[in-house]
Image (cartoon, rainbow, N blue to C red; front, side, top):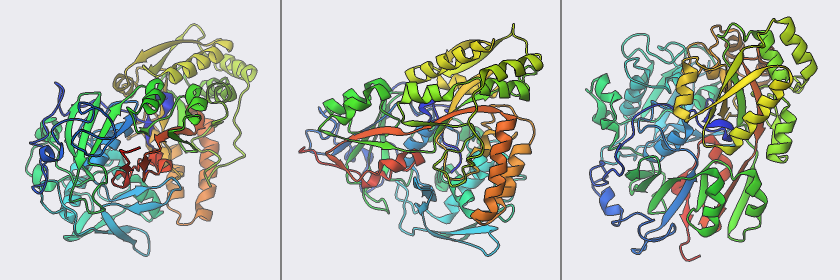
Amino acid sequence: MTAMFLAGAMAFGLTACGGKASDSGSQAAADNGAAPTQTAAEGSNAGSAESAGGSSGTASGEKVLTAAVSTAWDTMMPLNTTSNYTRMICDQIYDRLTQCKADGTIEGRLAESWTVNDDSTAVTFTLHDDAVWSDGEPVTAHDVVFSYQMYSDPQVEAKSRYHLQYIAGVDDSGAELSEDSIKVTADDDHTVTFELKSSMFADTFLQDIDTVFIIPKHIFEGKTAQEINAPDLWAKPVGSGPFIYDSEINGERMEFVKNPNYYLGVPKVDRLVIRVTDSASMLAGLINGDLDLIGYDSIIIDDWEMAKEQENLVTVSVPTTSYSTVIFNTDKPYLGQEVRQALSMAINRQVLVDALFQGEAEAIVTPFCSVSPYYNQDVEVWYDPEKAKTMLQEANFPFDQTLVFYISSGNSVTERIAALIVQDLQKVGVKVQIEQVDFPTLMSNMLDGKHDLGIIGSGGTMDPSESREMIHPDSSVNFCQLKDTELTDIIDKGNAELTFEARKPYFDEYQVKIRERSPMAYLYTKNVLTAYNKRVSGVEVENFNSLNWSSWNWDIDAAQ
């Protein structure tokens, strides 16, 4: 899986601009394409969890589980997002071939198994033969082929297209070289083969595509790009995932009913509610029973000790590969390499770790942290404000220039981080103006190069090449505006090697070079501080940061 983006310092979700399923509030359940054996309307028991008076059950006795996230989805079009909050929503409705676990291993989802050819230039997936769409149609390899053709079609709006970058027949952005040129072939109804551009470490490819959702061909075939790009076709989603879309209150909550035909097992809860909840309110919601678990994000550090004292909660501090970073706009003439190094060197990362995370974090200067087997311990975290000031003077930095620093609004941790960074930069004579905007605007403005600095987060992965998409010139998330491939060329050389021993020297070199080039000032990686009610079972919270809920395994004891 490639970099999983996060909103601000909470570090999960570069969100994209896009249409919602319903601009006016709730979307009716009855016409969403539910399976004939149980329509979404029949599965809803005529009311939401809240209207029936509780998160763990309703008057009709259905099992309801409410999961909290801090940021709303940005679209219902799964291919046109870089937001992990949106991907969590889509993952309940649709399927993907594989999914990753926290330890870096990969497990099948729609793919029952897969094989890699001898020279690691092709991967063949065998699909579950009992998977069906929520309207009763079978899921086949032809749906997989169609989905990848849709993702790679440059006329279709697909911000996630870069996940296709290693497949033959597309360019480095994942766009097809000619009509349907992407080399994904249905060998039969339940077998599909992907040809790769060159021999490469197969797990890198598998992790890269694990946020590519499979779309029903019979719904979208024959539609124009204009029709696909509009929100209408996505407002009544037909999927093959564990849950079926039921309703939403735009930007506040989304509700699902269980898919009675899910091939990996019928979900144990009848209704899943995903509720947007401010981070500062999550613990209160867990204590009073309005929330059952934190689906994505952390309890704020100020509440962590109190959370651990609650008898009704299970609390877990989960080490992750997620990180936060300050993006530099490398296209600005006054932000040359020496200036970027100096700005990075002026930031006291250890203060951020100690003051804001109370030891539940680790200072970094590259996208690698010490949990990664590829971590290069010789690339030290730097902090030298006196040297930084000298470097800025020698680079003729215009000290009368005020740098524009974009951050996402509504996140107190991000605000505190930005304030500390501004103080550090002021100590070396650099003036900074913070601009707080909503996250879609932040992303849009940074893609347009309107920023000097900006805070972005990524979920990271155990794959050492996960940061490639953030620094490749053709990537849709190249917020640092890099125009050359010096850094990604090193990654590509590492990916061409098929053993850890052969790969590590390249990624050691990459860490040296990315600190030298400093397109970003990587700040820290931090633990996710999460919790769930003791009446909830079947959750593996350590996998949440890998976009892996496996929500069909969740259960709740309404009697507790």
